[in-house]
Figure 1 (tube, one colour):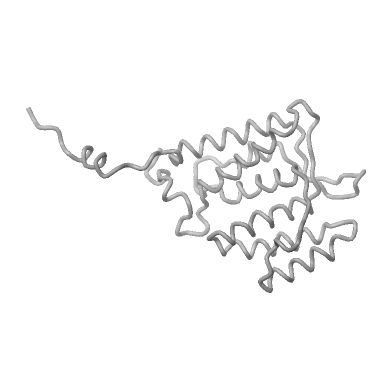
Figure 2: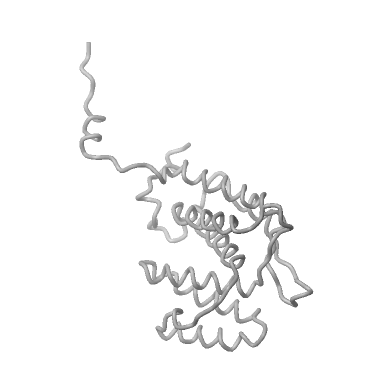
Length: 207
């Protein structure tokens, strides 16, 4: 591993460069998606969620992050709500539009109670994990993870939907990428005490 690819958990939380990605954030979202996948039978034929619901779930995730120290996420909250509005059915578009306008006026999403399926939350975490994935690594997670996720038209529901046809393969891909991030960025490394640092710096006596 090169020095450029090496960092520590403290540095991985939020880098100075907003386009550099965040290892700890990507790890969080990938493992959240894995936890949600555990709610489904691994032998089931797959799962899907309406694209609009996935965007609503992303908006909720990003709004929570904006409220807890990452105000830059607010811009993407608005974008996700706009995308959800475009694909909404059953008269939901007006309600989503109202929530988007309210959010831009400083009203939190908490006043708008959305009910989105677990599958939508799962796909939302995958998208956020890919967005936060550290840039410039020798390998990206897109091929392995997105090979198991597709976007298509669902005739029975008359909506554009996000699909995962093989739950087991998707979970394996998420697990590999989460472990890779944890190992490469030492996300579980215990903080060193001053004494440990001092002992390492003291040279052994010669002879």
